[in-house]
Image (tube, rainbow, N blue to C red; front, side):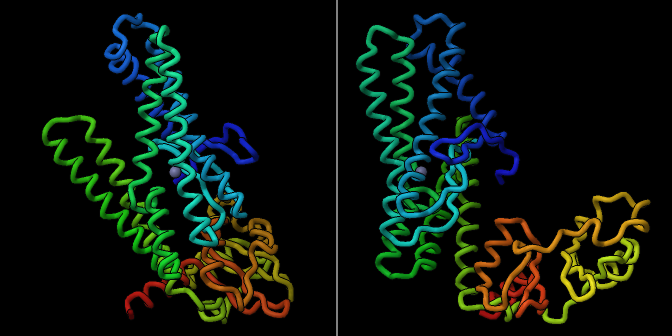
Length: 370
Ligand SMILES: [Zn+2]
């Protein structure tokens, strides 16, 4: 969901990105602070400059969110978990881990680091607020940030995955049972329930005419879908554990000749077999993969004069899987690298094709037979 985001810089080597939805919340917070908060807590301040104060406070809030996410990342790194990126979006921030923590202890410390840093920031702004007694404008900014950091720390400790508190819960369940997947499922279920409570609160307060309740609904909905998808992922991992590529791949692969014109590839392969992609071969060699996406990019008039090898993805290690690979690992790879299919190689020769849709189908059938 974070495709439309821009990198604004790197902190300790981690790319920090901003999703377009962040600009909405930045504008909303600045507006709410300038028109409601500052006039209330410091009515003597000139109204015009309240917009500037609002923008500064909003920026400091997002800096606080970045520090919260960096704290998670900092601990993750100590446990050898690389961080792909930190992204700011409408509901706050998210640090993307390249892999899951290796032990309950790593998970626990990593999860607690974020709320801990938010509380530290809260204390920092509390002290600032005390010291700035003579500067009402700055004091009001500090007061806002001390509140928000305490709220941020506490909100994140709610025990439902994917919130930090849900990770803490998962660490405890994982420690107790030794089963990472069932711990993930339980923590995600708790997350779903908490999200439903948020949605219910949102509805009730919406009926009583409180406009801010829209936030409860939106955040509840966001948490619900995140919890649900992590439950499904854990469920899929459970089903796929021990399943190897050779159990799921298609063994009799239809290949396309590298020199065939696209018009022929479309009529004799895409339309005839109904697959979304084929391995391309040049004599004995595997040359690449051609997918419907590659073909669609080219205007129709050029289909007859262009051959498969001109639009295909050249074969390299990123398109390769081995028969002995775990399907769950391969599925993760395909999702992370946005690939629909990989070529299975055995002893240097093409032995099959494994597709994302094939794995999904496998999961569906296994799920129904359960
Ligand atoms: Zn956090």
